[in-house]
Amino acid sequence: MPNQHGKLYVVATPIGNLADFSLRAIETLQQVDLVCAEDTRHARTLLQHHGITTHCIALHQHNEQQKAAELIQQIQQGLSIAIISDAGTPMISDPGMPVVALAQTAGISVSPIPGACALIAALSASGLAVTQFSFLGFLPRTTNARISLFKQQKNNTATWVFYESCHRIAACLNDLASVLPASQEIAVAREITKLHETIIKSSIADMLTLFSQDSNMQRGELVVMVSGVKPDKNPAVLSEQQLNTLQVLLAECSIKTAVKIAVEITGARKKLLYQAALELSAAQEQ
Image (tube, rainbow, N blue to C red; front, side, top):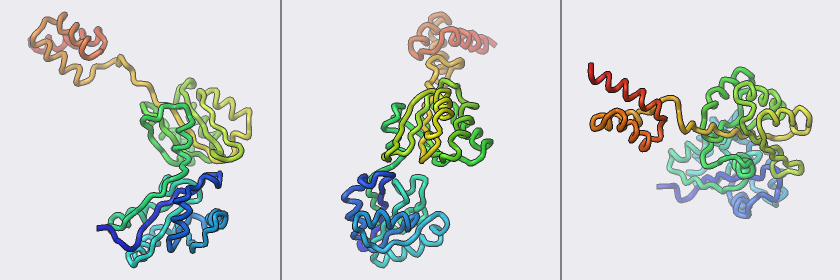
């Protein structure tokens, strides 16, 4: 049973525009006993802006492993604690995971207070397919590591998304262009919700040109989204299911009839089915 006294809240904060802060988030931070922030200096600016005076301590990637057990113990003793990051939703490439994981293991109630998230905001305005997507977080810092990752994602049929630093975005796009077709669609969102918000969709080639001509594009926080590869409706090889269908038909029909029906059922190429039918028939005769 969840602990009925203390509770852990995961609170999303604005990613730029201070108005993007829900009333529920403000009320939660006012009512909890303690706020754990990625950077207390940054957090105090936000908290003071909204008249929140709750005590605030640091919880970041360098101390969260050590702090986790202590915070869980405080919650078990009845305190309510909120986790916030510098911007957006905690845990999404931000600190906090050890505390949340330990809280779940300890049976402590963990309540998300939803709000801004650069990943979702960027996708919603990108114009790319978002029914399915993969999030890669922040990319590796070196060219070789980035290229290796891009090669792994090259055949991903879903949109894939990552965060990138303004200092590495130009090199990152060049690495992307070295692996993917120049015509592949991508979208880049920078400074979301801020004064110079820019969200552009284009081919990789056109995006490279834009970034080389406009130095302002290499400033601020960036989200890069890459369109997935469209599946080949007529692949060069038959799937196991298509082969099984053909084999069942060959047991009852001539090669010509089996291939004809298999084309209608599976949608596979007639030439591939016919070649496979000949091979299957030859194997049966041996």
